[in-house]
Length: 218
Image 1 (tube, rainbow, N blue to C red):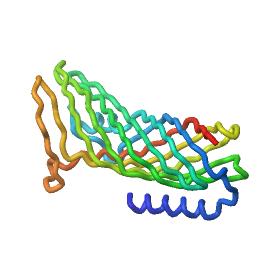
Image 2 (image 1 turned 90 degrees about the vertical axis):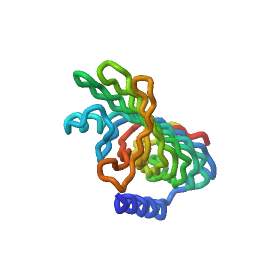
Image 3 (image 1 turned 120 degrees about the vertical axis):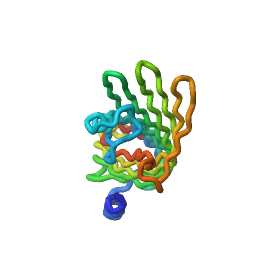
């Protein structure tokens, strides 16, 4: 994964170096996307540990909103990304929801005379995890929070000077070391440590593919 991120970063630098056109000196950019996300390391902490069930909960719907201030090709801003997946069995169910918030830094530049745009962004933020599960008809709520990081590449086709259609590929990584489980009216704290194989941290790494709209305030 580190090699993959390094390759993406170097690719962004190369594109930035060879971009020939120049955007307006300043602008504000907004992106709204929805699409598909999956957890390559699968997920855990579910009400059922069968392989088929875990696979089902390891892919789901994602959505994100991004806002940036741009100075020449440099962008700074904020990212919000959400993920949800759910599954049901005879005596149990799970509904996983994650919410990720992070400040962002990156580069954004025009291609093909400004008809297309391309950029990349990265940041460090907070991943909130929640599992609204049910066990034998009783609610079982699992909550947790972890520090995470992200890297994304986006491109846009500009319909007008201000409006465009955009696509985004992102990686968000986070490991959860403790959760709080509320079941039968009792709250239990569960700790995960990398030193014990049976209680490894919950790996919340996500790879997401989404498309939506870009709007530029020049």
